[in-house]
Amino acid sequence: MAQEIELGLDTFGDVPVGADGKPMPQAQVLRNVVEEAVLADAVGVDAIGLGEHHRDDFAISSPEVILGAIAGRTKRIKLGSAVTVLSSDDPVRLFQRFSTLDAVSNGRAEVTLGRGSFSESYPLFGYDMNDYEQLFEEKLYLFTRLIREPKVTWKGETRAPLKQQRVYPPLSPAGLKTWIGVGGSPESVVRAVRHDLPMILAIIGGAPQRFLPFVDLYKRAYEQIGGDPKPLGVHSPGHVAATDAQARDEAFPAYKRLHDRIGRERGWPALTRADFDREVDHGSMYVGSPETVARKIAATAKALGLGRFDMKYSVGPLEHEALMRSVELYGTKVMPMVRDLLAG
Image (cartoon, rainbow, N blue to C red; front, top):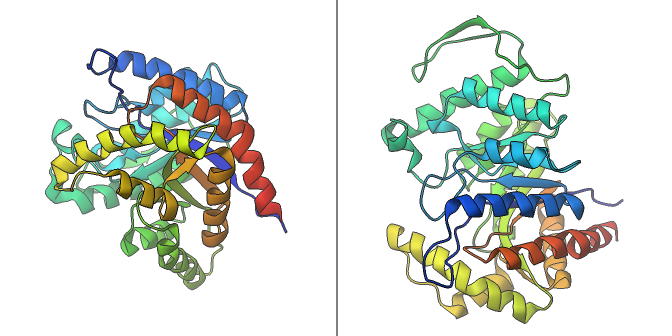
C-alpha cells in the first residue's frame, strides 16, 4: 500500500548579502518570499510555511500578513506558520489572525505552534523567560479551546480570563489544522498527544532515525488514551539544484553564514566544509540533485512513518534566484520521485 504524504516548503525569510556586502533590505526579502510561494503553488507544492522571528537575519516577523498576500495570488497551496511563537503571543489575537487567513484563503490556513528556538520575542513583547513553561502550557490550552469551542470560558495567569466568550471571525466547520512543533523533548511529544494535535519534528542535525524513540512515544501515548495518532511531520533544511555538486556548492556558503552567526551567539564552533558534507551525507540536510533529495526524503518518510515532510528551502541567506530554482525542482522533480518511491 502506497504511503500517502504531503510535501511542503518552509522559509524564515533568510536575509542574503548583496554584491555590495550589505544585507538585502528586509522589504525586498519579503516580496521575494511571496514570489517563491506563488511559484511553489504553480509547481504543485502542497504547503508553504513561514517561520516567525524578530531579528535582523530573518525578515519574517508576521507570517500571517505575508500568507494573506500569498493567498490572494495562489489557488491551492496550504498556508501555514513554521512556527508561531505562541508563548509571546496572545492566543485570542492569534486565533483571529488565522481564522481571518482561513476565511480569505477559502480554508487553506494552518498553524504550527511552538516555543521557538530563539528568545528575542520574549523581551520584545514583555515576557519573562523564567515563565517559559507556564506561558506555553496556559496559552496552548486556551488556543485549543478556541479552535474547538464556539464559546470559551478560561482562567489563567498569563492573560485576562474569558467567560462564555465568542471570538470572531469564527472558523468554518472544517476547523483550523493546528500542529505542535517539537524540537526533541519527550515532554513536548506527550503535550501534543494530551492536546490531541498532530506533531511536526524539527530535525536540523544528526540522522533522522535518532528521532524514532519520539515517534514510538507518540504512538504509545495515543494507545494509552485509546486514540488514533494524528499525522506526524518533519521539518528539515535542504536545497535542490541540477547536480549534487552544484547544490552543495550553492548551499554551503549560505548555511555556514547562518550556522556561524547563530553559533557565535550560542558557543558553537565554526562550520567546516567537512562538517557540512558529513551532515548532507548522513544527517538531516536534504541537499543535492532532485534524485538525491527525493531518495533521502523517501527514506526518512518510511523510517518515521511520516504524513508530512517540509523542507526549509532557505538554507541560510541564499540568493532569490537559487531559491526559485530549488522551489521549481522540488515541485516538478523531487515530489513526483518521492511519491513513486513511497508507492513501491
